Image (cartoon, rainbow, N blue to C red):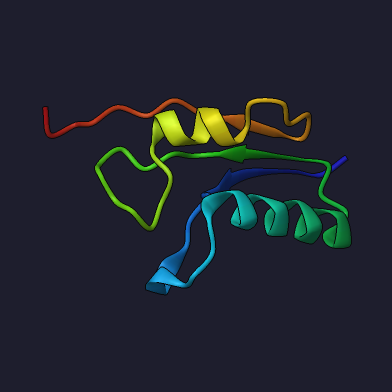
Length: 76
């Protein structure tokens, strides 16, 4: 079993995709590469191109293959 321990739900370059679409692409890529599970690391600062903690929790709500890793904002 392969587990990818460091992925982000991100949309670099501000392409016209929702972060939910990015998640679906991640799941497709995982299937093609034989990756069973991935741990999603949220961004810890406001950034519209990379999902923060609240957004990651919303996106992964009912996913069985994706797990969120909590992060802290070290600047506070």
